[in-house]
Image (tube, rainbow over all chains, first blue to last red; front, side):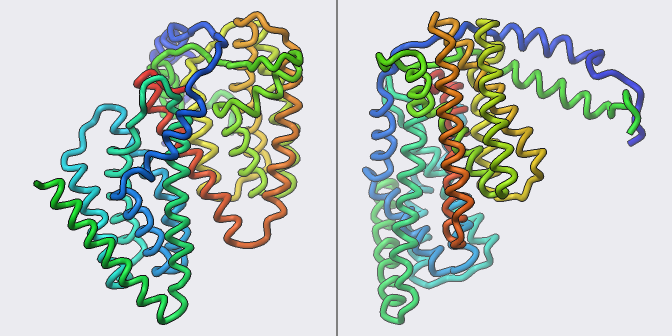
Length: 204
Length: 209
């Protein structure tokens, strides 16, 4: 594009932008904080309290271990951000139809992937896991009890989810041995069966 | 490039960015300066260590600097500390937070995202990020201290704590040799970015901090 000689501050949008910015000025204050540690502990505990979330997150780690490089590190790096995006749209009040079904279905499908030792391309695996991450974030990322810190709740929630991935990856290290490979496939089948149970419960 | 020649699309982008910033729900800047009973210097030190809204971006900046090598770490160490204290003094003298508190979410998202992406950045870019972070958060800290009618010496404590945290964290990341440890640093960055995104959502709901 051919550059033109103009000054940014003289653009018609700029005075309005500056006025709105100044209108948003608010006084600073310092006060005694309450509910800080509790918010973090609630966030840390929340993903561990729901078996559907626990199984799906561990299955992500197990599948990552089966898929090997680079999926084993791409999934734990990208999952928290995609999950947070799900939480973000939930916090904005944007509804996600069938979110509970999606969560139950995540355990079924991820369990099946581990059981079948499926090895799709990284893109397909990423899209599949990202879709489930949005569902989990939307449903679980917004459950902050009143009076607690949203930031620390979020941090605890993300760390606990990352911890579950780490457990899955660590357990998935048994993939190196033939017996371990079989055990992983059985555990995947168990996760899928549990997912079917969750799905029946949601649909009932 | 000739001075004064500006792409219209770039000008419009700046204006739209400012509008978006202004559209963020205005909230009070929450400095949360701790009271240790040991004086303002220690109050400032404890503020950095106990305030996640300041500590997490500092850690993310230090992780990013560490991933980008020793020179980036050195620039960050001095650039961030000086900018934070300068911004703090300016905010203290002004006595008002000129930006909504939610803009701190931007530092979470940007620094966490860059750490997670593990992109090689030039030392100048790293220094620019450190200075921007320091000025923004320092200003909010200084304004909070002034509003609470606390002593400005707290800023010296804040600056000291930042220097130590950045030095230790960057040095730790620089010392990492195993490939999986670098991935662990990237995962930590993605956690900060995720927390920032959720924090932005909570801000919309009015329960961010």
